[in-house]
Image 1 (spheres, helix red, strand yellow):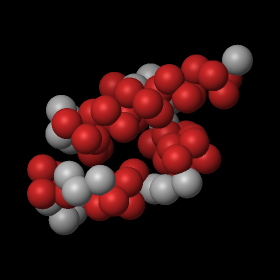
Image 2 (tube, rainbow, N blue to C red; image 1 turned 90 degrees about the vertical axis):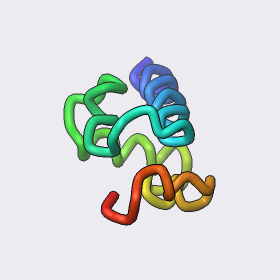
Image 3 (tube, rainbow, N blue to C red; image 1 turned 90 degrees about the horizontal axis):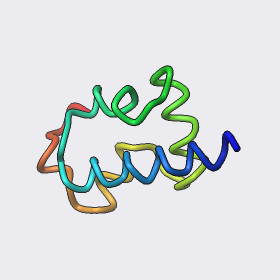
Length: 68
């Protein structure tokens, strides 16, 4: 059940990252993760990438700048 919930959270995070809907620092909390480290761990496990790598691979880094 935890993995299913995290998969939904990560999908939402991916949407936020693609659309530039919020700042990188706000995404873990907005997606329901208790901590930044839990978010990064789940994101890497589900996508194979760190969030910053995901941003770069999907061509949305110009929305966030280089300091993510």
